Image (cartoon, rainbow, N blue to C red; front, side, top):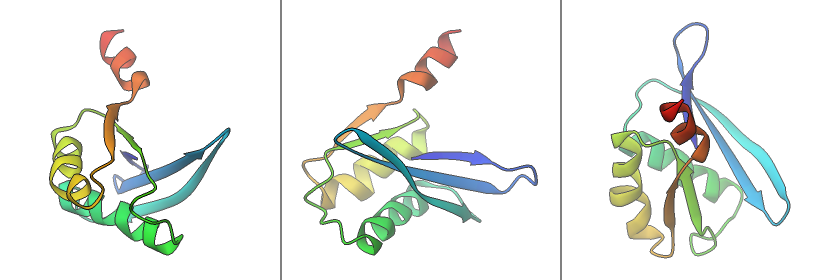
Length: 97
C-alpha cells in the first residue's frame, strides 16, 4: 500500500497485490482522511471484495510513516496474525540518497 497525493492535493491510496510472479494494481482509492484506521479498513475492504481470506496474506509492505506502522500493529495484525510488516526498500533508498 502506498499513499500519495494527486495534482489537486487529494490523498490517493494505491494497493498492489503480488502472487507468485505477478504484481497487479488492484485498487486506487481517494481518501478524505488518511490515518491508521482508514488505511487498514481500505485494505480489509479490498480483501473482502476479492474474496481473499484474511488467513492468506503473508506480507504487508509500506513506507515507514507512523500511521502505517500503527495500521499494521492495531488494525491488520489482530485479524491477520500471520502477517509480517516490511518497509519498502525504495523508500529507504530514497531517504538515504
